[in-house]
Image (cartoon, rainbow, N blue to C red; front, top):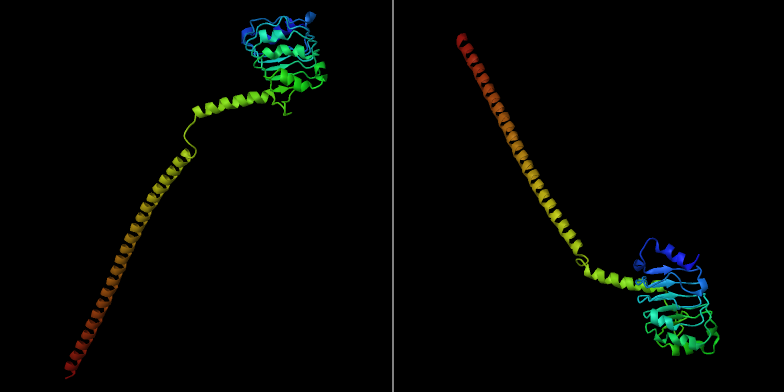
Length: 263
């Protein structure tokens, strides 16, 4: 597929000024030139044209917001001065697998003041003696060459860098949207639990008082009933004694009457 058709396909019904990333890998460059890419892609931040048989950057449009440019596995041998003119804010440039042979070709990248990472892996220039030392001396603005800094520390992945930036932004948002300190809700819950316990305790106390009062009243009633029973029993015994006495008296009176008749 030719580069122009590939660009139209990648747009997916979007306007060029809405696109921030564009991947055109493995398509075909006619005559080794860039086609279908123009100044309307003004918001583009990431552009990848790997393995497209690109030999010239002369038709590269002005992309002031472009930060990352992938040009690996092409046949570029020079003309890198166009990059500083058209993409002045580049921070990452991958030229691995191209036809770059000498330091003079790379010298044109000195004008990319924001460039931090450069990849020349699999280019003939890497066969030069003191290659790494020479590149770091020539391009003092870069931090990483072929994925490593001057102390051979590996460069972080571009995705990790983006994540770190995102985390910092998230942290600011979290600070802005910070709510009450930790434990605040827990304290409220503890207070609510204490109030519930107090209410339950007061209800229980009232219940106990009611039970105690009813119990005492029952006891008093029972005592009164017992006293009444005791009084009734005492009265019955007294009545029986009185009846017994009256019977004995009548018996004696009868005996006395009998003796008088015998006389």
